[in-house]
Amino acid sequence: MLSANSRLCSGNAIGLHARFTTRWRRYVGISVQLEVLTELLRHNKVDAATKTMDTTRTHVREGLAEARQSIWAAVAGLGRKDVAGAIEACHRES
Image 1 (cartoon, rainbow, N blue to C red):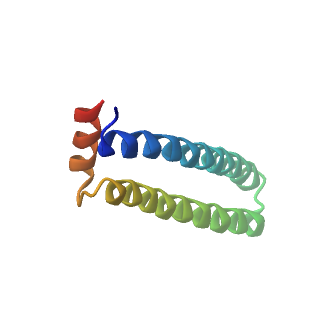
Image 2 (cartoon, rainbow, N blue to C red):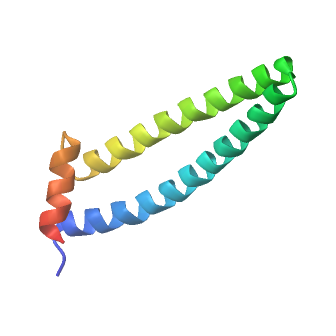
């Protein structure tokens, strides 16, 4: 029988995987935007490059905020106040 922490760690792992997949897609999009930015700059299209850079910056900030929220939600779900303690609890239970 799984302990409460084991169930939470398993559930968090599934949720984290879904969030990781979403984040991965976001980073692929950011990577593409940076390639576009490179080409725009190569062709001296400064206005378009500035808009692309602003959009990319926004996506990066949103992605980082989302990552922080996911980590702290997982930590709180394990009844911990720190990331290291949550990871240690999951590791002990596995």
